[in-house]
Image (cartoon, rainbow, N blue to C red; front, side, top):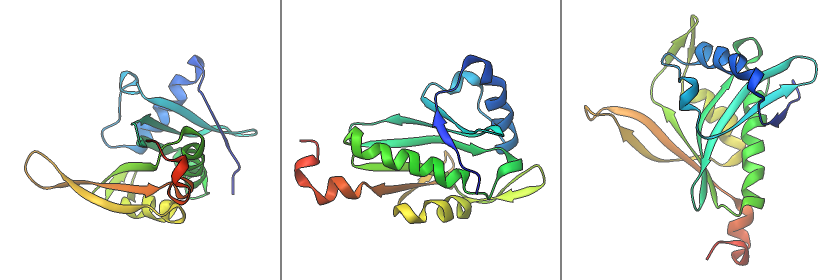
Length: 161
């Protein structure tokens, strides 16, 4: 497994993030779309291998974007980024981590990706389906997944009032 640390990106790393974004999504975000908290996954020898973006709600952290460079996928990087955010729950005093996961399989660069990859990486954190979000035509668009912060739920005095 490739070991990473998560840190705030520098201005000079913008193009690397955008390259990973374009390689990961059929409809990639523009740089202006990254208004949320953004951290890059960095390996000492390889440099930036992925990123995760989120925003804070009063009781949860919502993942808005997560991607791993195609060269380094399926090596535990996505799982480590989820762990980084899950660990933030304890000291941010939020009770849950959530993400909207697109429905269906998407082909990017000739490879198929779908919700099952997120579910596999998120399983250790107890992510569960909360609701299905519909698009403007009333068709399934994405799944809202949420996991509870075990520390907050085990220690009632730690929860926000």
